[in-house]
Length: 108
Image (cartoon, rainbow, N blue to C red; front, side, top):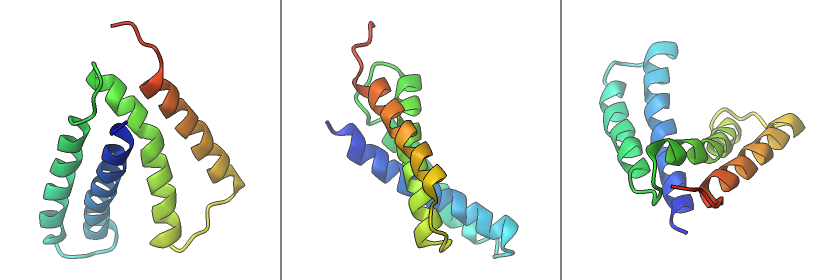
């Protein structure tokens, strides 16, 4: 299924865009960082429309688990903080929930 790679790309775009805003507001970086945030966040929104599902809300809900996984990867790779067992347990629950939402036999 193509949803998982799309979700992974969307997560990278969303986290990059949000980090650019974070850098501007919380790290005192130049407002020019917002110019990087805008295309990233637009790409994120566009990518979510590429998921093959009958409802936008279902696409967004299933994306949540991938976002949590990506945020924990960011925590490790960028922030330098190793996720603990509670982080890993939480992301496991989120990914199971995402799979149920995306792959479940829904009535239309």
